[in-house]
Image (cartoon, rainbow, N blue to C red; front, side, top):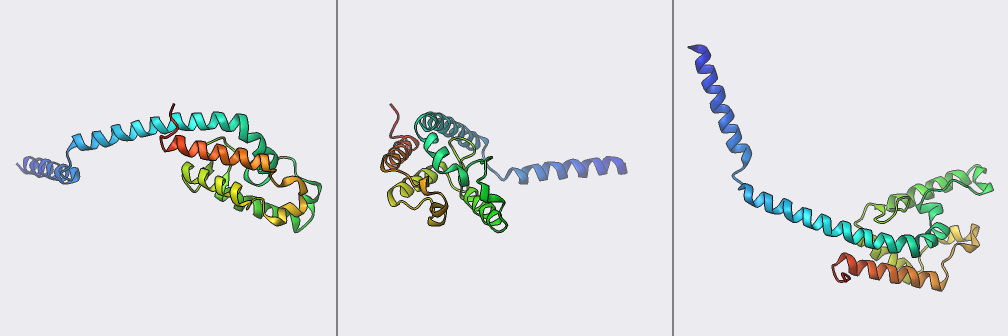
Length: 170
């Protein structure tokens, strides 16, 4: 009899927990949200692929030449990298740069922001000429972007922003 009562109490406890754990939400609403998320994810994936295709062809070569030392993967360090103090400063700068925007992978980049915010930031950098920092330019005279490179980055950023906002779908 005691076993029967324990089983009865345990089954009532399970039923009660399952009712409260459910939270009273209807499954139909949850399924709609999941379906919408899948639709948005698919739309974003298509947009990212389109943006990345243009990036690989027109923008990545610029970034490899001008930005990857800090925002990408570098394997060939300059001769002065081994100088004590310089090495630590460069390591710190590269670590900080990658915290904000890591271009080691293709678009979308690795960052602490959304791909849309990354594109807006890249556009601003092109418009305001805020990269690379002056202390980097002092050691790398050819690191500044040309006018043509800036315009290509700005145009790519603007076109990509439109694609992500759903305005650039042909």
